[in-house]
Image (spheres, rainbow, N blue to C red):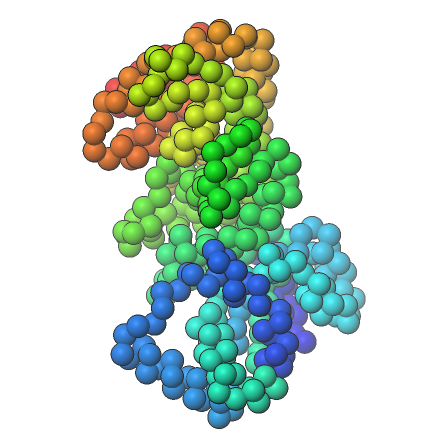
Length: 396
């Protein structure tokens, strides 16, 4: 077992040789679980691709040695501290036990999805393959942030996966990390996108998108354009480099849920809002475009607009200041009764602006809410109501 520590992103690189059956046991969930890894690579359909894959399968059956596969494991603070002590002592006897005991949802296949598929196909031809050996490199981190930063840096300048795909690789570990730290949040699966019944209920994939929004400081992230994606990755690298993106996102996710809790039960006259976008308080943070605008406005305040890079000290200073502003803001909102709160939010003006665009509605709404919450922050939450925010956003 060969273990090295990456001092830049505070993670360990571990190289170990396994029997293929042992390797498959470790990554089984990461490989098969929908939404984590399996659906990320487009199936190889071209004639040349299929030919290469069949050749790889044939070579595996005949005993070829494949390049190492790379597996990411997020072990949390406690697990990471244990590995630190092992590394300092140079004794790794318990490290294999820690890997084997890792929660399946914290494991991701970073590099080697196609090789793993070929191995499985080769096993169907010959079970002898199970007894063969394969080298595995583990990237062991305390949080998803370190894993993402390393993935982004190592893929930049090569033929890369786009940023969206790299986020998808750590989808399950990220979701687990968020749910472990945000108790007031309930995540709904993609297969069960039921209507929200309480504040803090969101679709899991939508929260992962908000993480992307927060990290890139963009209400809409364009991952289809190659050029835009490279600049987007640079912005993401900038905020992950200080290793605090996750912590800040978690804190402001909690704040978003507090806001949701305050407005969730607001009810409007059903006849008046029958054809409107926002018919009740729960519709506000039930809207992904509103949430994206909210998170991007916060991120731009803390990290600067895309292309800017604030120091870690400045980021922390601005984040702390903004958290204090939100705390006092929520105290004031909680003093209002339902009628006063409905009047404060000004659903009428908000819904009027939602009708002004026929094309590109989603893009318009993301920019609209980004500007609206940017205005609220700029005014230090001292407005009599949100009407100026909606008007400022509508005139953008």
